[in-house]
Image 1 (cartoon, helix red, strand yellow):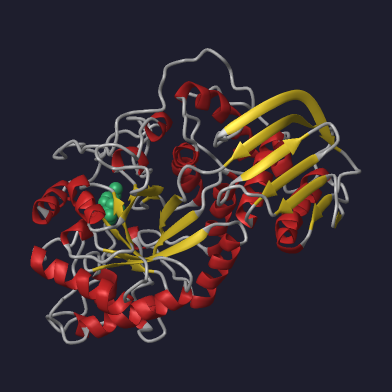
Image 2 (image 1 turned 180 degrees about the vertical axis):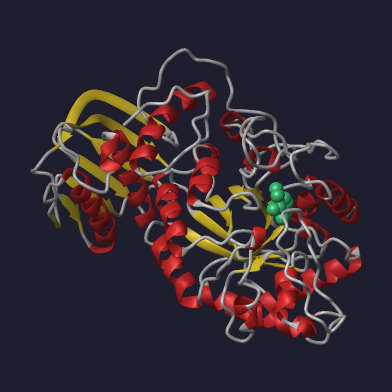
Amino acid sequence: MLLLALVACESFHADPIDTGRGRPPRPDTGEDSGDTGDSGAGPSLPLVPWPQSVTATGGTWTIDATVSVGAAGLAAREGDALAERLRASTGFAVPIGETGTIQLELGGDEPPEGYTLDVTAEGVTVTASDPAGLFYGVQTLLQLAPAAVYGATPAADVVWTVPTVHVEDAPRFGWRGVMIDVARHFFSVADIERQVDVMAAHKLNRLHLHLSDDQGWRIEILSWPRLAEVGGATEVGGGPGGYYTQADLEAIIAYAEARHVTVIPEVDFPGHANAALSAYAELNESGVAAEPYTGTPVLSTPLWLDGPDTRPFVADVWRELAALAPDTVVHIGGDEAVGLSAVDYADFVEWLEHDVAGEGSRVVGWDEIGGAQLSAPFYVQYWYDLESARDAVAQGGRMIASPATHTYFDMKQSSDAEYGQVWAGIVTTRTAYVWDPVGNGLTEETVAGVEACLWTEFIDDNAKMDFMLWPRAAATAEVGWTTDRVWSDFQGRLAYDGARLTVMGVGYAPDPDIDWVAP
Ligand code: TNX
């Protein structure tokens, strides 16, 4: 079964550029949902993702020069971030102390990441049981304010009116991710942190970095320095590539963590290993280092599994990577190991999961890992082969839903788009929104969440990254957060998200389904 999936991948990837041929339609995990037609009612409030429960109470509160933030103890970090945002955009002093006109309180009984937000004519209270909940309450408050609140410098002539509301909110899923492939094209620390800001404003909380592939190796490994030095020195198209030092990755992790985004690093083995093979001759059966690969079609050169240095090498890489991200899940890759037998593939994945990662450590693997014998806890990331993903879930894994047909944002958004893939179809904002990760035997409990994936064979700068990620990742954010969804309602609210994205400097794709609002 695994082999069949690999064969299907290989034949498909033999012709990956925009033909749309040769690809069997893949099942989604669930039925279409979130589309009950046009409700006719415009959005009451411009919130994305939509909270679980919102009551508009009909009044207004205004942020003015008297605004202050109250936040103590563990809430202080969230308070500081809010005060900083308000200072930057409004120019007000925004003092922070124990009490303020915006009060952030821990100690509520809200679920994890949940919050209660009250905006009254007098001021604002956010309560939560954890700092992430406070952070999300603050994000909702910011979305209720004029979009200029996201500005980097004080906006003149803005009346900072906020509607009064009572919001009770918590996410449907704990895993609301975006994957960025920094291997096919390299993106700097600043480029990544910029996307983290936009993600966090949409309550997305996982940043999965695809750090190695055939075309490049992007993370410094001290015990195997040529990986970064040689494997990192190229990318698709033959550009200079680049890599993160370990300090760089630690900086990204800290930046993201301050915004309640957990970084999930991935080194992709046993397939997609050409960059590693180009850095070290001894990892090749021929004894000669592989030629660097800079093409766009998926190559997926596998590791030489019988090589005497191969497993020690993989174990070293794993150890260093896991040490960089000590409290989180590490992604072991495992996709498209073209040319390996199902037995050899399973043997490698089992060794990596059992012997290297070790009991109790949480790993994620692409859906092909369902062909191995795995031990929970682990996650399986469904992108293509639902049967294999289900095999993994049957072994106690939880699923991260990334069906290519709805979450692969390297797909074109219209047939006349200048660049992008089409093998999983045209993925419009509506396509990214109208699906559900639960269904077809997968329950709310077995699904950990959702992840949007940005493969970068055709994406080589920030303008393209913005255009491909936004607004589609906002749709993913709502799929991951909101239980009851209605496309026509989202359409209306997303229009206002356009104003926010513009203020944040994000060049989003102006999907013609949306009546975009200017800031
Ligand atoms: C499949 S998804 C891949 C990637 C490609 C992508 C292009 C997955 C686990 N493998 O290597 O970049 O398709 O759409």
